[in-house]
Image 1: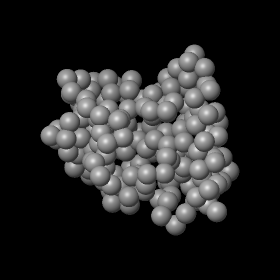
Image 2: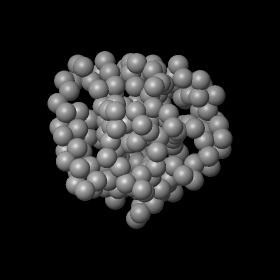
Image 3: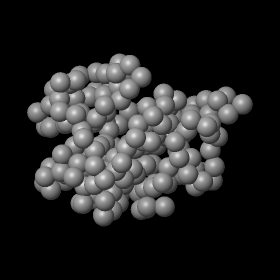
Image 4: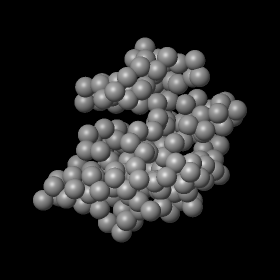
Length: 184
């Protein structure tokens, strides 16, 4: 039953997120970026693992310039098969589509070597106040996060923080959630 519930909820949340006006989305994105920059883990990071937005996700690309100004390298995910690697992004990176058509650094780019000081900003559809996360169903972050030794921060708009979400045993719980209003 959980899988069917998750599928229906994904559809409803995607519709709600893509229905946000461009003006409101821009304001939400700017506020979320400010909240992330103000978070102590951003300025103290030795690297930031981030993402390029798809399907109305929060656009955090303004963080790339802030990170560059602080000499913090940015790494973006590239999905290959059932795995996800974070590869170095630079302004001059030639982004190419991965297996899902999501733009990513080329597979030859330097791979992230996360430490305890690495910040991973996690995308998705919704967060539960009980520590659950709803992504797109591929399980890439559910497989990556248990091996990640740094600090993970799920970035989501406040309106997509729900009391609880349907979840399954393989779903990796969240420890930190940030919205345009700050960390929960």
